[in-house]
Image (cartoon, rainbow over the protein chains, first blue to last red):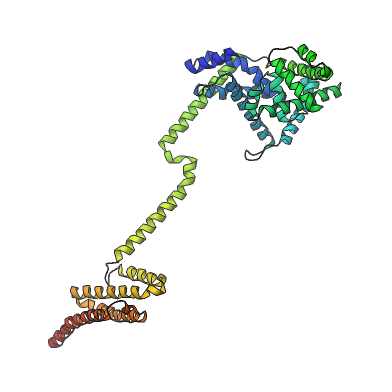
Amino acid sequence: MVNINLYLKNFKKSGDDIWFEKIYIKFLPKIYRFFYLKLFDKQLSEDLASEVFIRVYKNLRKINLNIKTFQVWIYRIASNLLIDHYRKKTGYGKEEPFEEKADALIENDMLIKNSPILKKELGFENFKLIDAIGKLTKLQKDIIILKFVEDFDFETIARIFGKKQSTIRGILFRAITKLKDEIKNNK
Amino acid sequence: MNEKTERIFNRCLKLISRGYSIQYCLKKYSRYKDTLEEYFETIKYLESLKNIKPKDINIKSSLDKIYKSVKNSTRLDKAISKSKTAAPYSGRRISLLKPAVVFIMVLVVVIFSFAGTVYASQNSLPGENLYTIKRAAESVQLFFYPESKKGQLHFKLLNNRIYEADRLIKNGQDSNMELIEELLLEVDEEYDQCKKYNFFKAIDEEETVTTINNIKNRYRNKYRRHDQDLEEFN
């Protein structure tokens, strides 16, 4: 993680693309996973991840960031892109509130459609887990993935979603309990 | 029970983030060992998702794509900003504001030109173009004036008519005769109005009457003599 701080500093200072490449290599799998675990579409996840890095490259020279603020920033970009993608898919206008229901509908639909591919790609155990994750709300899903898959601390997650750390802890516990029960029932 | 489990679960997460092992947590909270084990098993499942990675991605070509796309969009941004500096009023917000600004400007110009015309007409005499505007402005003033102060306004109008008649007599043109006669009739009318509103209690009536008579005499002297000259000529 110390390295990322160095890459950010050097890229800002020299503007050399080599530092951006290092950041890209480190964060691409994370951002790809962020999209893939919601969309279950390989190509779409790659395209969206690429779009995130286009925005990062375009603006990274203009702002001073350290590893923590960079993580918050990049995941906010990803989160906004995902919301835009859902809006386009459901035909929701920007001024309309985006409901959790519509979100869940799309995701479940995708899960069913892609289940044979997913089985092949992830293996059976993982698929059962993803099926259980699919039953969580959007926020629960985001928090659980950032905490246990991406190893983010509570402070960063709280900053990404603009919530208190205690709220994040509560949501995480409810999500993991639900997930545990789902897996238990499916066994 | 659930609250307590949540508290212990969060304590365990804190310990793990500080470098303690799962085994240490299970030993420390041995009363909740079974429940905690289920949670840790779920977390283990979740951690297996770390294996999801973009496969078959060529880093170099995807980076080139990013650089190309940013270059293109930067060029586009520059072109847009250039066109904006060339025509600063072509922005969307400005185009929305434009009709409002134009309307306000037109309104200001109309109000100022109207006020200017009324002001300019104050020194006009009968027979001049602006005189109609002067009389119209006086009528409007008379209509909106409070009833208690109408005498004062009629006195002002009386003075206006005397002043106009005086100017016309001084000009001494033959064509002014009819206009002066009309003005003198109006002088009488305004005098009556002043009386009606008891204005002369506040001001010396005799002085006004003298002024009116003076102007009438001056008119008679000038134009009657002229009439006599005409009669003699015929």
